[in-house]
Image 1 (tube, rainbow, N blue to C red):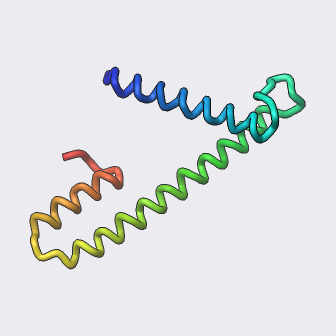
Image 2 (cartoon, rainbow, N blue to C red; image 1 turned 60 degrees about the vertical axis):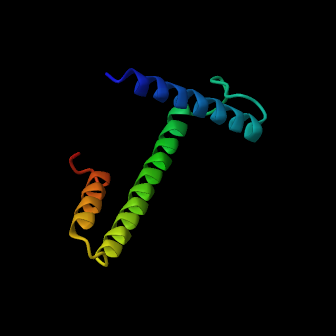
Length: 98
């Protein structure tokens, strides 16, 4: 296991959790209270749906960028540059690593 990656992931999680808590305090005037009159499962489901929509949007955005780069490299004369760029784009699209 890559310990540095785990430590970085935990740090990013903590930073985002703190930012979200602060955002909630600004929006609602207080921190989240589990005893508030909300259905927390419904709230979580709504947030997950939004998160999924963000993932789909980002995937579509990245695919658009990849397609545009592929169009541009078709104008390149050098074959090895084309191959290298295409290989990197394949990796971004979820292909195998070099």
